[in-house]
Length: 398
Ligand SMILES: [Zn+2]
Image 1 (tube, rainbow, N blue to C red):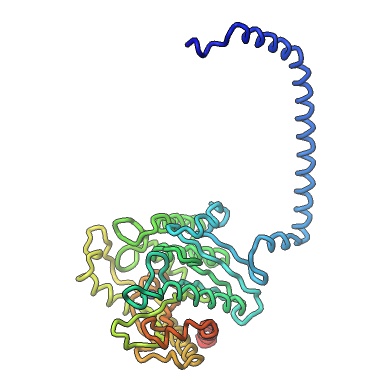
Image 2: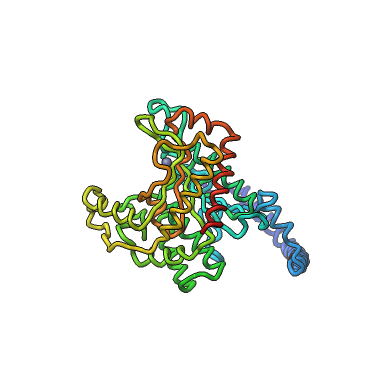
């Protein structure tokens, strides 16, 4: 107690100081008040001038130089974000980028608008990433990982598509791990934005916002299991009401394609070359029926088993697969496969949305010729060009 009490001498000094302070206090208060008012006036004047000039420039359409400063591309405008809702929650943009456990971040790159692919949007998915390396070679003590090839090739495809005027969404921009259903949720969110922007929403804006909130669950959970809730509205066989609404919207987005980029692996190391996978209603339904008797996820009591669902653009998916294969192998004959060039299968990354799409197995990482071919930058560039030629051919023949 005594230690905290001030000594009498100190207390006297305190009292003297207080009296002096009281005497000059009013003067100081008045002077501070004046300065504060002056500061407010100057600040208000400055803000007024800035707002006025920005408004004036905006009216004249001269604010583009400001926007360009904040975008990293020269001819293209880029935007990153785990996803962005218009006029809502824009603080998420760019959040958690480069984080191994991040909810993922896509990159949006827009072409100049006068190329052969202007007006078209391609959602590019570099397969795997982070702790999910995809296949590797050699199997023990690997030197090469699929996820790295996928990202390099997808980046090159993105650049070439943008050069041809397309708008590209790249779902993985670094070696982060992103769950499969997180990627799919982002595809739906991107499509909601595109449909809304193009006036193609088949439901109200409030229904779109409701679906956005449901999809955000998958991104936040960033897991793929039924138990974690990471599959969100995409859980179960068949298609639920919410997913059906999204797919119906996506079937009509003719100017949007989905491409997933992968490298293949053959245990016997006997296979080589490019293979393209696509989905059809029949391939999905046949596979789901098969899994009902073998897959433990399907046998959980909380796994919804719904009726079969039809409505996909089967022929479009097949046409796209053919166009991609023909152009890749046409430009790089070494990649002609000794397996099946185009294959119907049930990949979730193609199944859980309604966009026309394909999964490109560019080459076999386990084949030394394939692998060496793709270690060369110029060959990766030829693959990227060929994919773009394939996309152009698809739209010309559709
Ligand atoms: Zn893969």
